[in-house]
Image (cartoon, rainbow, N blue to C red):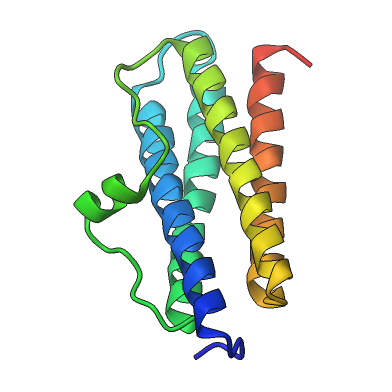
Length: 155
């Protein structure tokens, strides 16, 4: 169990982490799906970029879920529960190269902002472990967004 003794604080942090986990799962699936379906002149480059990003997202799912468990709560485990908790929308269609890049850029930035907000909440309750984890996620997601945006050719 976490060193954080305030049970209300642990619960509040875990609820935010559950939502973040769900959004990460949706972004993971979207990125992996775009990896499978990308076509065009930049196929090879984007295929590899998407693979790097979905691999990182996959690894982060375990870290986030384990933090929820360390706080003393069950991590969501079913697709239904993850869908219900997620604020991020699944892709409704398979866009072209530019559409994939724009959608993934926007989703990574959205999730980066959410990670920063979660870090702020954790800092408020002096949960430095969660705060550090979420700051690292925010940094990685922001870097992903920058790479995707650079692939579009916009600054």
